Length: 328
Image (cartoon, rainbow, N blue to C red; front, side, top):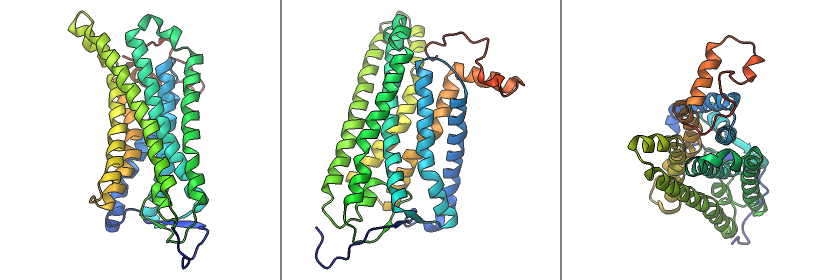
């Protein structure tokens, strides 16, 4: 709790230090960061540009938009710190960045659950896939994912804004992560800490549980198929989703566990992992789905092999069936 000799202030700007302890290497670190961001921008923009129909493609488009927002929320400011030593950030902008980072991280987790549902229905009840996951149902699922993330993360900036500040306005980070900001308050911030723990448990916990349950049912359906070729072909439709899940949850859990329990882990390692968690999935997701998904690969080949006008590029490939069906 604050004492009487503290001088309180209303922070107008914060100073983001970048990655403490490796300042001389930040320019070199910026090179892979920048390359990952370029790949994420180009790949996810292509996914959005390619117009395909079906629940999985709608969820994939949502994932691409989420990845674009997530990576853009941190990288431009991070690169300005590394390249131009532009460390100042307005407190209101800092809170906005905090909200977008945590909101769209939770949203991405929810989209993976929706994609797991699509894989479950496509494999366990394929004849009813188009009747169960209609456009109306997909829109409701998407709206639920957006509302859940938006509402659950909303207290973050309000809690951070209401604390009294009497310490330094220097944040040892490349972006305004929630705990990094509220640690600058000279008050009992256990409410923020507990709410952050609640948010992690209430979002990632159920999401990982539902994904695990869907894949248990998928594996049961796969192993009930009569031939090994049929089993491999059916389960192969899930490989893209599984790779995307691993690229998101493994860095997220590693970053969370080292932050909570790795007190002897150097600070610069914490910050590097926090950046990798927000940069690697947006970079890998379009690559994973572009390589593993035949319809996306065919669409890309069609777009780049036909010299059409800009208008005609927005129409579906006439050789493609009206219902693309499950991803293969």
